[in-house]
Length: 241
Length: 256
Image (tube, rainbow over all chains, first blue to last red; front, side):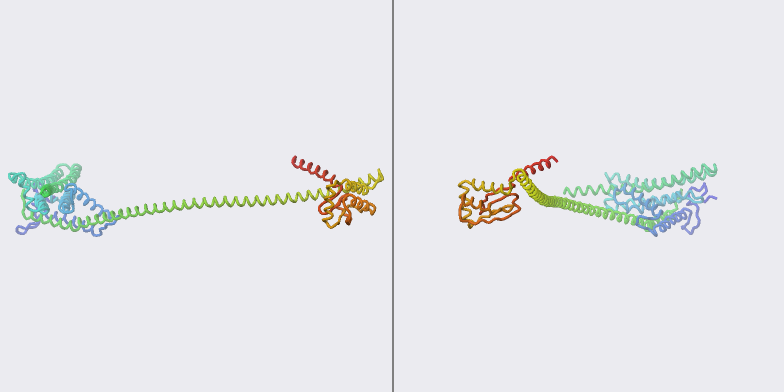
């Protein structure tokens, strides 16, 4: 029996427990499951972490993942990547794990809930000014919204909001639609075709995780680069004076 | 699509919590491990580089030492060669001297042997000649060889010229007026008187004559006085014989 029926567009609608406005639905439950897997897995692997040449294969695996994330971030920012790894890395790992686990029967990816994707996109929406401001202060960051003239301010705001919405809907749309397609196919055609679609789903899940993480980094990097350009100008002025 | 704001906030919280937990248990540890490893590798590389530099320095040092050793070896070899050459020359010189000495000794010995041989030959030949002549004279002419020798001696005394006579006179006077006449045979008293008279007449008077029988004077007679002498013997003939014989032997030696 399916946890989320076809007519239920989101796992949010499957409420397990509720008390007043506090509810525990499938989305939160599977989010905890993914969190548990990631955190417990990390603890287990890094419990006996070694900086020697001979390390366990799981440590190798995690080092490869972290290295790739680090490399990608470094390519974007052209600077130190370590301060962005927690955000970008967690986005990628959480979304990827959520999507990949969709092959497990009975599991519903939390990312197929628009609430989850909206929450993640909101985190990115907050992180962009957070990193920008923490780097060079409030004034410089918000000054960018009035560049080249103050008329562009509404467009900048709309841009911020729209790209957050785009992040939300892209991930949600892909994962939700795929799950619905799989559900429909299981009902219509047996065996082979749904399996192929599941495999395709794995690919889509990983790609979507990658896209979400990369786009987040791009947004952060664009905010940082704007700050850097401003800094360069200030430096030039200082030299001129 | 409906967004439940509680779930929305809960998901934000969940995400932030996950971010914190992963930062603590995953990224922090993994990054630290990787950085530590990088540091270690960099340290090893630096150490390797340092060792390489040190090894190069050592290699240069050893090369220099090797060069010095080679030069020293070459020098020692040259010195040894020169010393060996000098020693070889010295030994060669020594050997050559020894060979010369041996050769000289051998030649001396050879000469001595030759002399002894010729002396012996002369003695034997003289004796044989003396015997033969005496026998021939006795058989053919009934004449004694000793008499003929004394006659020849007397003839020689009488044939002395004035200058020689003066010299002999002075010699006799200088020698204490003593004259020694040596002969291989005994001279009879009559013949001694003839000799004395001939001497007194030809040379001088007032000296004493002493007669000595010496077998070494082969078939001859001689007067000796203070470095001067009047003599006749077969030796003169024998000398010619020895000279001829020596020449013949040398020719044969050269031919060999």
